[in-house]
Amino acid sequence: MASHPQTPQQTPPMNPPTVGFDLDMTLIDSRPGIRANYRALSEETGVPVDYDLVVSRLGPPVEHELANWFPAAEVAAAADRYREIYPTHAITPTGALAGAREAVAAVRALGGRAIVVTAKHEPSAKLHLAHLGIEPDAVIGRLWAEAKAEALLAHGAGVYVGDHTADVRGAKAANCLSVAVTTGPCDAQELWAAGADAVLPDLTGFPARLSAWVAASGAGRF
Image (cartoon, rainbow, N blue to C red; front, top):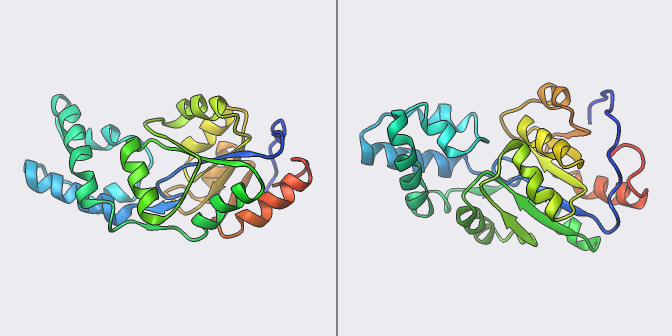
């Protein structure tokens, strides 16, 4: 991890920990599946979409992205249709990111709970996880940015892992330690600037860091 001034650590969670994870571009590389789904939606509706641009900025709810392509009055219906066809087009092409399975398993190996808190439609999130053999203890969908704090607080999470500056904001709103990965659209500088407590290149080093942090009762750097 690159050296960077650390923000103050949050209140250490009780052991064993509950750790929240974002989904898209944190645990899974959903770009191929989302590209395919937008292509199908575009072909069905006749509305042109720049699929490569779309997948370069994943994170916000689908309505935010569709508003760039569809008239305002049609966004809600387009979002409903996007979710309807999503299982057909987006699940199979999507793969797990490096270290994703191991990161979730590491939480559970410590006796903790791993939850997924995502802006994605919850049934679609569950389909992705089941298809890839990633087994969190709970999945909560349709929450974005600070709204993610609702689920993190309800589940007593002490750590939230995400790839977007909005994930950092969600962690902070829940008084969680914010662990960010640069596998999504935000680079390390942006994530640090948003207030992340740790920035990792991916999840491969997460299990060792989590184990050491829990052993130290949440003291010091992650």
